[in-house]
Structures are given as structure tokens and as C-alpha cells.
Length: 114
Image (cartoon, rainbow, N blue to C red; front, top):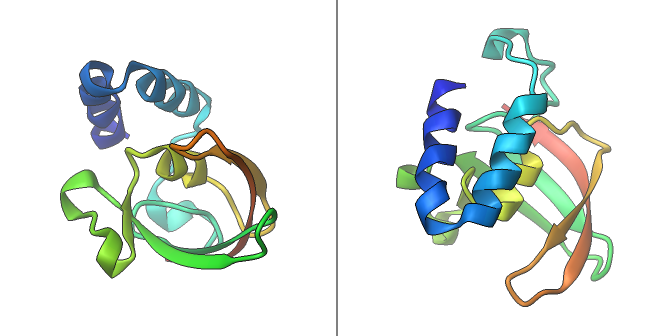
């Protein structure tokens, strides 16, 4: 949790709106050890398959710290709008995501592997 809190603080300078959303998510989070998380719950390092309900396209990504993120390798940063949205979700969860273009997407978490 401390790592995520430091990331949120760092975001305040670059993207205050995202930082606020990140802090809101962290304030609602229940802190547990990774070993105690259900296997289908998104955590750092989780590989997640989600489907965009608007386009029908599925995508598989691994949630990573910013320094390990590489979109070409399928690793997305937890400090992005979609990364913030995914953390803590489980298979079957739906969430909304606003793309950089301003387009709203409805996404469904199809599968999670840790």
C-alpha cells in the first residue's frame, strides 16, 4: 500500500485529477497481504483479460509499477486511469473507463491470474 500511496503523491504534480481518483480508490481499499487475496482479484503483477463492451474487443494486460510498464509487452502502469480502475477488481466486475479521447468505455473483467 505504501508503494501505491507514493505513486499517488507523485501523480499530484503530473495529473491532479488522476491522483485524486487514485487516492479515492486507495481510501476505500482494504489492505491485505497478497497471499490472502482471492486468486481472481487484481493486484500488482496480475494478468487481466477484460472486454470492452462497446467494441466487443478483449485485451490481456499485466498490471505493473510505472518503471516496469511497457505497453508493447502488455504491461500497463497502475498509475494510469485504467490501472487505477483495475486494481482490486475481480473476474466478472464491470467498470467505466474514460479514454484520452474523451470516449467512455464499459469494460468487463473476464479473467485474472496472479
